[in-house]
Image (cartoon, rainbow, N blue to C red; front, side):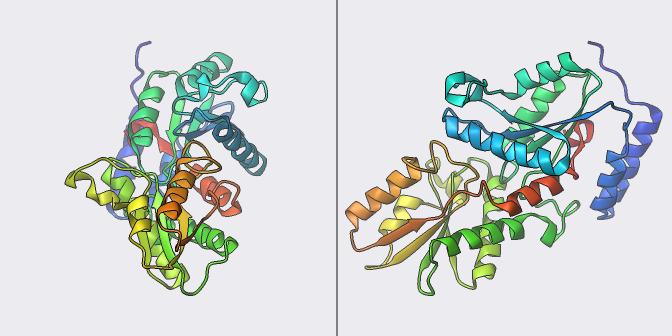
Amino acid sequence: RKRTRPSTGVCQMDRLATVLLAAGLGSAALVLLRRQGRRMKKTRVALVDNGSLKPEATKSLRRLAAALSERSKLQVDAVSARFADRIKAKDLDGKKGEVLEGWFKRILEEDPQTEVRLLPLLIGPSDTLTKAMPESAKKVNALQVEIAPPLVSLCPALFGGQESGALQLAEMLRSRLLEIDLGPEDTVLLCDHGSPVPRVANAKMAVRDALATAIDRQVFSCCMERREGEAYDFNGELLQTVLLALPHGAIAKVALLFLQEGRHAGPGGDIEQIVAGAMEKRPDLSIRTTAVLAGHSLLEDLLLKRLEQSIPLRVFH
């Protein structure tokens, strides 16, 4: 299809939004951008995660999408960046999983006038958000697409300290730690998946600092896995390494910066196996991990806030 050029009015609005951003008025810029193009018949939201071959991850995404639909009064679909369409329908209660490109195609066929908002279920600005989502959206020029920020957004022009999302995630983790009986002398670790992208690690560190303040003690950051080499030291040490280096008789509580259960977190996952391996080598240790963040009411609150902060694709990328 021939790409349609934005109208003069739209271009002027974009320039004004850029001025507002430069002036540090991020909230005003977002409101201005989102007032454009409101003649669409309806809005459709895709709650987008990285994707997993584990059925429970897609089921969890669907539960969260249903909760957001109920609260927002918008139709929110569970969509993965990859993998979910490979899961057998019988393992997903008879309903096949969807990935972004297939979902876009279906929405375009149903109603090309639909306004689409992509809501990332992501801690930070990973490649799924900065590359996969915009690239998929650009293939459907007929749809008006907006993309929301990740849960933790450290862009100072758009979000101040309390609006970055780090405080909200820290509060979720604090409550998860209390669920596993956080003691005054316990060692607290914050563990995420690990990423080759520094800006994702920066989001984790912001959450770590906020969590340390929330529980009034030092929090050590680590990751489940990472690439080798000094170039990826921003991830911190591996969880296994940190656990094995704990003092004799230490009691450790591992706050999992994971959003859903799947191959990594949850029963039988990589984290559970790492912890079991560490305790086998160090039977003097006591180690417990928190539940994932899915199911926490504050997660829904933050996602709904991010949904209202989505910006047009032409500005995003």
